[in-house]
Structure formats: C-alpha cells, structure tokens
Length: 168
Image 1: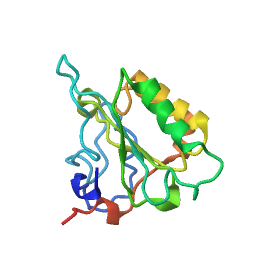
Image 2: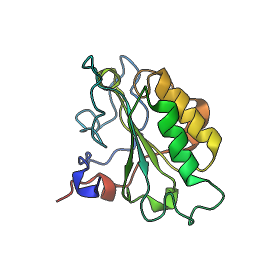
Image 3: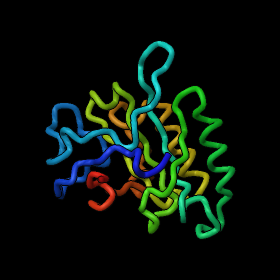
Image 4: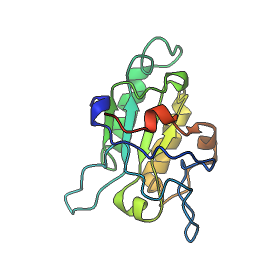
C-alpha cells in the first residue's frame, strides 16, 4: 500500500494526545472527533463485524538493517501468525516517521471506533516483548475496547502534522 492510499488525518493542532481511546463519557480531544480512520479500516469478518487492523511500516528505515539487533522478518511473521484469527496485519511503505523506526499502527475495530478508540501509532517497536504486548492488546479488543498494556505508553506517539495533513 502506498502513501497515496492512506486516509488523511485531521490537521488541526491539539495539545491533547489523540493516541489513546477517549474514556467513556469524556469528550474527545479537540480536532479528533471527526478524524477519519488512518490507516484504512480492517476487512469485515464473515459475520460482518470489522476487526482491528495492524499496519507495519516496512519502508526506507523500518524493517531494514538501519534498525540493528532485531529480526525484522521474525517480528512480522510473529505478528501475522499470532493475529491471524483476530486482525489483519498489513505491510505498508514508509509512514514517514523514520526517527521512530520500527513503526506499527493499530487501527480500532468498528466497535472500538464507536467506543471512542482512535488509531494508535507505536514507534521504536524494536524488541520481541513489545510485539507480544501489541498482540495481547489487539486480542483483547484493541483501541476503544481494551486498555493497552502500560508499557505501550513508552512506544505511543502522535505523528507530525506533515503526516496527518491531507495528501494531495
């Protein structure tokens, strides 16, 4: 999937972090209430309910020897194998957050989105334990439906406005 197929994100400035789901009953962070999905929503299950989706960057820096000490193929294979029955794991070209390689984006399911979940960008996912924590969280429901393991706070980031602005 190329960058041109990614949905644009809201370009309004906000000091509140839109990475984690909005708690039930709380107002969403400014500029995030109508934020379109990014990356695109997961494929529907046979029963019709959309699932979480996991997007793994494998562009110019992520998944390359520029990030040493990690078996990138094993990381991707492990995510795909462990999430096969739960969520699609997609590979995309550069997400333009190279300073945070390896980047993984967890997109909420339709139910998670309705519950206030928003896409969560995770950077520097360079050890097997982080991938296992992401897997456990997605299996538990992902953004909007399950609290992420606390350690994932260390990996979460808000992408720059350059990434979020509409692609034209």
